[in-house]
View 1 (spheres, protein in one colour):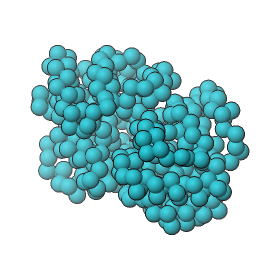
View 2: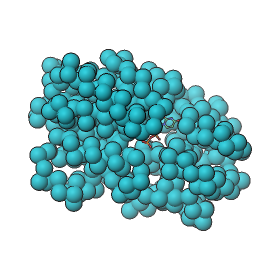
View 3: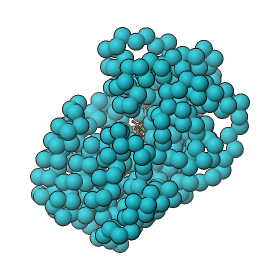
View 4: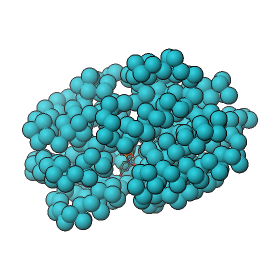
Length: 357
Ligand code: UDP
C-alpha cells in the first residue's frame, strides 16, 4: 500500500507523526511525505520533525505567505503533478488547512482515494476559512476518520450516509501523540528555566478572526491585561500574530516567547494553571493534562469539552473571559471522561486504510 501523506502546518506535523509512526511499522506499506511549506520557520516546522522523529519530507513545495486562493491554487498544481507521478493507493490529509483542501482536491480529481483525519469537525461558522476547508474536504474524501462521536453525528446530519464513503470513529490522533510523547517531553524540555513564575496562565492567539480584526484584537489584549495583573501570562507568539502586533505598534506586558516546539509546549501545558487560546489543538491538550481552558473564539469544534464543563467559549467578550477566569481559577479539575478515544486512533486509522485499500 502506497500512501502520500500531506502536511504543511504545525498541528499537522504532530498529527502526521502519530499516524506515520504506525504506518511505517506495517510491512508492505510505503509512505511518501509531502510538506507543502505552509509553515516554514524552523520553530514552526523543523523542530517538530526533529523532536517527533518524522522522516524528512520526500517533497517540500515551499508554498507559504500567500492569500488563501493563491496558496491553495499553487499547492493544488504542484500536488497534482506529484500524485500523477507517485500514483498512491491513498492520499492522507489532516484537519482543516489550505494544505488539507489542496491535497484532497488534487487526489479526488485524479480518482485517487482520500483519507481525512479529523473528519466531521464543524464550528458551523462559514466565515472561518478552516470551516470551508473541512466541509469541502469531507465531501470529496473516501475514508472519513472521526475523532469524536459528535464528528460522526455531524456527518450523518449532513447526509453523508447517502454518499459513497466510509465513516469511522477512531479517536483523536493528538491524544495518541500527547500520550506517546508526554514522558519524552518532560525529560527533554528545558522551557521551565525560561519561565520566571511558579504559577502562570498559558495563552496562544493566532486565528485570523482574532488577529485580523483590530477591534477584536485590542479587546482581547485588554482582557488579557486584566488577567495578567492577577497571574502572569506566558504567550508563545505565532509569527503571524507577532507581525500583526508589530505593525499595529501594540505594546504587550505579557511574558512573550517565540513559538516553542512540541516538547516545550506539552511542558508548559503541564505546568500552567489555566489555558486561554484560540487554538483547536491546545483546547484538547489542556484536557489531556487536566487543565481548564478558555476558548477565545465564538464557537468550538470540540464541543464535548464545553459539555464536560472544562472549557468555556467566550469569544472576545471581556465580561465572559473574566468571569470564566474567576470560575476556573477557583475550581478543581475532576473530569475523567475520555471523549477522544484510548490513544490508539492511529492504529485504527492505519487498519482502516489497509482494510479499504
Ligand atoms: N504548539 C506548539 N508550540 C507553540 C504553539 C502551539 O508546539 O508555540 C502546538 C500545540 O501544542 C498544538 C498545536 O501546536 O499541539 C496546535 O497548533 P495551532 O494552535 O497552530 O493550530 P490549531 O490546532 O488551532 O489548528
